[in-house]
Image 1: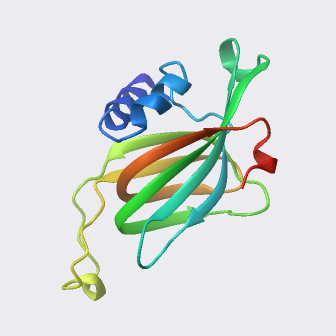
Image 2: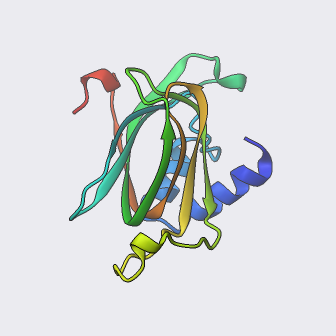
Length: 153
């Protein structure tokens, strides 16, 4: 991720409950390189969720020995606008970027429904499987350390 994108991601994470823990987890570089999208759950009433599995490796270029592994649960709210391609049995992303969403016109079918457009755009960069963008507000981020994400709930 270019430095400007990383700077904006860190700035946004600093404002979200649990976001500073995510920055610390990645030793100041929350790029989510080779993270896997485990779940995108959209709920009509109640919180929606983006769940990622991510690892931290020792050394440069994300190629050293595994240091730690965790499940990142992003609780999403407000109107959630999703543009996602390629979701399948494996959904590795090259990285994740957060940016402040630009004002956007709402589709006429959404007018008058009391929906607030999300303030953040989550960009999932393509690697193998799912990629795209999610426009929403992020209520909080919870990190659960795990030894093996395939054994996590």
